[in-house]
Structure formats: structure tokens, C-alpha cells
Length: 295
Image (cartoon, rainbow, N blue to C red):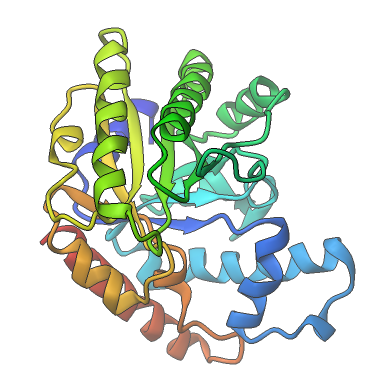
């Protein structure tokens, strides 16, 4: 796929984006969920090799390439690896799946009700390498813990500032200002967040676009102004700790948002499943998530 073909696939595709970007501290938990105990690996190299085996198995499974997964977000080591004898981004593109790369370096400690992203001094070098490998876009996450206006303003400003660095390197940024779904003030805080997002979208130069990855809102349809905004290519939803059933139920109430789930996609996959069992389990999750995305 060319860059323009990838843009069209993401803008109009009837499906969802898979999040395959667990990294560092979240990898052992992901492996345990997959049925691989900590005793089965030793050190980071073996840990990342195990998670790459899982991701490659997902990518090569027939149901993953069936057209309902329109994009996939990768961890840097996954981008640098191979699947099916091909570099992962190229293999995804062969299967009709647009590759994205997680670029943030984790979160700062909470301040003013939010966790900002850690600095990314080497971002441009990573973006150039990703573009050379055929990656279409990026994703970067920060987290809102409470409805603190000053914190939300700072968080959205950081997301758009880093997004401009990504646009300048010719890639499509997914901005992910996640709102913690356990926050008691989320309903009102999400309105503050949306207002700040719209301000920054309005300020983007003509011809520039971003994507947004947002928590499924408490108030169904809240994000419609962002979905309809000409500076937004697509709005995707994170599962945020919901089970697959819960996330799909909430997502279906928000037309125009499509899923970008990790736990909601992978929760029932196990290393010990036969290839047929693995494909059936993954296919069932893909069908359920796709149905909620295009509802």
C-alpha cells in the first residue's frame, strides 16, 4: 500500500485498529494473560522474544488478515522484527493492515491531575527510521486522572506539540489523551478535554490532520464534534480496562468511533491453543469488535 492508500484505508475502512504495542513493564502481564509464566523466560531479550512470537502468531492468523483489522499499532521492537519472513510493517501492509508505531517513552509522575509523557529527544530519528520501514503513523499516550483544568490544558498542548513534530516528518500522529475510566469526575472532565482538543484542531494549518485515540465517553456521542472535524482523519477508542463485552457495548453507542483495543482483542488468546482454536478465538473477538466499530 502507498501512503495515500493507507490514508484512505484508515479514513474509510469498515473495521478497527489492533493495539499490539505492549512494552516494557506491561509485557510480563501480557505474557501471563497469554499463558506464559515468568519462569519461561529470563531477561528482557527472552521476554521480548516471547511477546514477538505471540504478535507474529496473531499477524499470521487467517482471521487477522480478513479485512476487519484495518490497522495495527506496534512496539518498536516489533517494528524491527519479522513475521512470515518479512519485516513486520511490510507484512502487515501485505495483509491489508496499516502499520502504526508507539513512540512515547512512558509517563511522568502525576501532577495537576494528569500524567504527561516523558520527553522524547530522539523522536525525529525514530520517525525517520519508521517511515523508511513503511510505517504510516504513530501513537503516543498520556493520562488524565481527574478534572483539573490546568492539567488537561497542559496535557493537550503537549499532545499537539509532539503531534506537530510527527506531522513534520511525514507521518500521521494518533494523539491519545486517555481519561482514566475509574475517575469519578470523568463525565465533566471529558467535556473539558473535548473543548481543549477542538481549540487545537481549529489551530492546525489547512492540509494537516491528526487522529485521536480517546476513552469511550460517559455521555454517548460526546466526541462527535471531533469525529466531524476536518482536521481529524479518524477517532478511535481505547478499551481502558473494560472487558471485550463491556468495551463493545459502550463503543456501539458512539457512531463514528472505531475500536483500537489491546486487552479487548487479546484477552482470550492462549499460547497452548491449537492453530485452529487460536484462529477461532481471535476471529470471534475480531468479529465482535468490528461489529461494535461499524454499528
